Length: 583
Ligand code: ARG
Image (cartoon, rainbow, N blue to C red; front, side):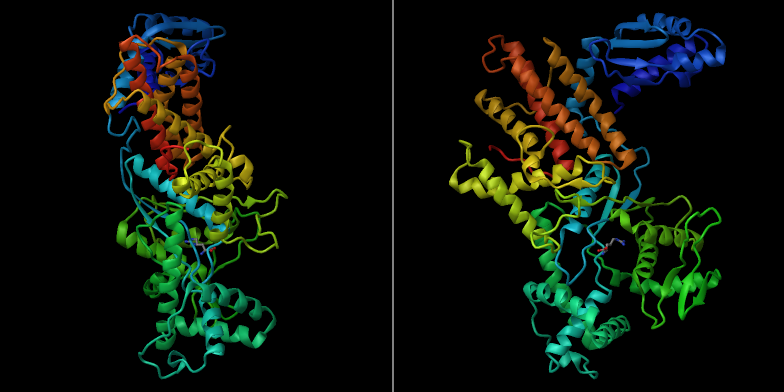
């Protein structure tokens, strides 16, 4: 389905052409002064340069043609050469009813709906999920849903950090504590591995990590364990599988609370089988060379104005590192899915790593030249001191602790509501809390840092998840009170200005979705959801729907707000925010 601005752009382009100018001048945008007009076109200014004529003269010619068109209520020139347009209500309603009956609710569908792989989440096995990974999960999940809503086939991959030093540290520490476990026997082939728990891992990793910083001998052991694991030592592989089992179960339960889910639970280890092919390709293309005992690839460019270190493919002990697994994973993704885009939702401070990886992938031709490889880097979530958000004692905040804090805050916030009963209190608070955190994050452009301000996020006013959920509950209650149960929508008359504004915002939503997709930026979805909620509130304030006696009017209005709810819910769904019935 075409969006309203696309339709009008065609109409205005035709008019330019009819007047003897270029079609490309007819681009129509929404006016930011609805009191003056709804749409505008600034093409006469470019035409003026090309044809050496005053802009308003060209605008006049085009407006005259547009005025003949039944779509417009008015199309006029505004000096020095803007074309200002307002369309007829009948045209708005025709489009509204079309969108209301459209299964995509007017979201433009991709012309070439190819495959996108999105790599987000990126938790590390054996390390507790901390808030550094929160943004990746929140932003990645919403980009996945956005791309799907635009018709793309999207594959989400959590890309677990399951193959690096953190596992070596845990294995080395477990070995020091339990040398008698059969898996530590060099001759181990198979046998039972003692059961581990998430709590054990949560304790052991920080302990081992700290120890490796002061205890050189232990550090060497951990590195050795990592290399041995990567070289498939059977006892370590068996233990690693147990660590993975426990860790993944724990991660899944945390992601579930956030409404985040992945198609693939691949890890860095799954790339291992492509490492030989990677090394072979890099060797064949004469890109790999030795430097200080390691095997590296030069990825610098003449145009670089900062030093660009070579990317390390194999360390001197033949172990793989972060870049190795990322490159091998590109081979795997290309083989399995031939994606047209691979997006990485990762902390923007990893920019250098990804620049190296992408350049190396291009040099080696690991993907076709037109495959997009993009880092969608995000900024940090800061505390009120402007520094990365920490626990009270200065440690890294665990995601589970954060969710608890947020739910507690929501619990006290909701106490005053008549709808919140003892039974549903915790459930509603949990949802409101998660909505607050997610919206508080997604409303910022992903690349920006922002301050985690729970009070503000939980406020019933302003651009918050709480306000949106609250708006949905208000619509729910109107619909319930009116005993309105229609699920198809039809509006055949416009009675008031706010109603027109609401319809116009609904019609412009498709454009917002397109832009969000183009810029890979869910913040536009947040802004639009907020806008719909605000205009709905104004509409509801101005028009007394429930007491309206004119049946036809009332039906139109009910249809409009029911559809508004549906559209807001679609926004929430893309943001992976769950609504509540009452609050
Ligand atoms: N595990 C990594 C980290 O904690 C993030 C992984 C991001 N994805 C990737 N393909 N490198 O920093």
